[in-house]
Length: 384
Image 1 (cartoon, rainbow, N blue to C red):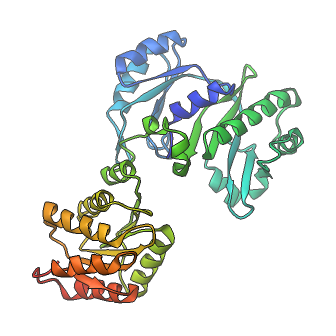
Image 2 (image 1 turned 180 degrees about the vertical axis):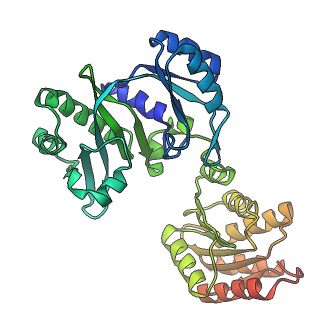
Image 3 (image 1 turned 30 degrees about the vertical axis):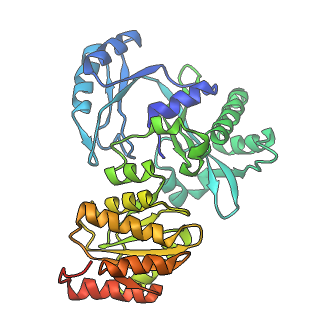
């Protein structure tokens, strides 16, 4: 889950990371009042979950309170990459001397968090890493040991930060590490971390991505979600605890278990099909959960057939079958459904489905072949 800039910076501030003075608003008139409070010259920043806001016109410099109101009116009326701008952050304008990058993410190759610093902040850090890798400095962090000062100093020596600001930088780095840990983040980033003309280190922008798998530890995450960034299907999936990712194909996949879901998608592609989604209903899925998963798939106009692949370990196949049949009775889908059940109570489940004249299969390959037959040969509509 990605956080808005103002949400990230609010968290940073709570952990002692200095940020510019500013407030968020959805009313242009309030931007004028905020600018007056901040001395007149402010930056109006669109709060949408996309990169490149500045290039898209979503970040504007206002030199007076009246201009702040005018620019806020413009930005609040924009759509950036298809997302409506509903809020703007009104920040004090900072006279910048130098820009740096500081971030923490997970290095999946080294299997531990890594802190990244650069003296080339303010731009696209991925592009900098590709074009000028000598400007990127990294150090791993062992979670059992923590972030040692000497590791931060190793980073500082590469980014050309004046010595008198080292102590403050070390403090900011430790705070960012604590944020990363406490919020179960996969990314905590300050870009840019600026040294201002009046010699302050400030987090001018902030970005955080939180691990959805840690949601059970952070019920407050729900309040931070941006409904505009997540489509209706993703919100519905989250509501029922389903793992759902929208893809570009036309075969809706409903599977229990992430590994089985990936294998199902691989075999679909092997036979020339294109998955419309990744959807894992998890173990022990109830009929209600199955029904919710079907509603999500059937709401996608790209889906031309639904492939259900269930391995009944914890999950009872007869419960899955009941969920399928109740959903069909309720929604009366206009697309065919192919079902493969194996495992706990699979016989009972398949018997229920066959009695309802459903397309069933006993192996994964058979289910995919039948799915491809439906896609390639059309569907008469006489069976589900």
